[in-house]
Image 1: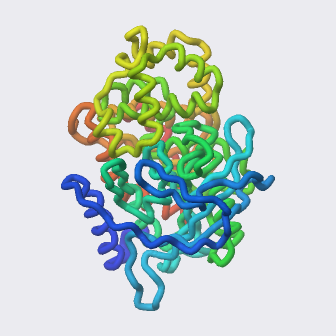
Image 2 (image 1 turned 180 degrees about the horizontal axis):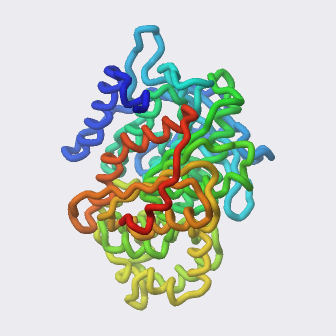
Length: 458
């Protein structure tokens, strides 16, 4: 049995309960107070930016010139955690956080600034060897800069009449910190950093951002990380796609970041299938985020969207570009993209008929490369938002390429068609197993692929 599962964590339990209570209070419209603004460690020389009633600190505005090296630190400053308790030894629990900005490279080969956060845990690492590092890639947060995961660590719940943002992945972050592993969280390209839109589910942008977050954490002064610190990746939904992509891209893009283990939960590996799943669902706004991001990155997609969208579609894209997932569900939940187009066809139908658009989505396919290190792919068999079949196919594709794959089918009852329940419930029910599996890898324990059972599993 993993040391993580057997170790008592009373203090963590209080923090986890607080995190869950914060998420739960969205249902009754509770609000939270603003956290105290941190003192900047680097002068930015710019003014804060406002996004849907939330002030984005000047820290998030990238400089005109970026470093040449991927993962190089641009700036950093203290980050107050919204959920924290004083420790008996004077150190805060679960740890001390630092806001980061670092350099990465986007899918077009251009330098880009990415923000995020590093958390030095107060818990000791007892797994042998130096303290390991886990890069956490968050699930869907939205496309407005105020939705950034690093913001969610500071403000687990933001409700102001214009924005509804919930840091639901904070629970996984705190559970990982409780093992004694350090955690670095990426905001992805364009989420947080105010110079561009978030390139939602862009395979290369997200994979690069995850790997460069590891490099940035290593470069941060004053941490307990060493050159021998093992590295793991953890992500679910959008985050599962990001970690899966990072595992594929690591050998070529970041050979200096060897991976001990990667958890990819509910990964959107085939965006053609995923677009069909989210259209008309509670998460229909994600179509807007994807179109916005790909139109920014690929000129062909911009022209195709401009030619096919009607006024309602253009308004939906403009609205969603500044929204977090909470208000997007309220405003655009269960919308159908056929109402956004001139022809009355769905976005998926238009893309299927347009070779240039389909070529863009084909480039986003995850599963064409062998992943580095052991990987664990988990997917809910009832998931109808990020469809189960395409996630399982990713595991099969990796198995056929000789990957060390642990595949887990999370078998739950149907909890409501297209309501997000079939997608989100495995996030919680599989979390203990996922963190235990990853902790074992960080401790250096070997794992055996279950690829041989794949033909008989759902």
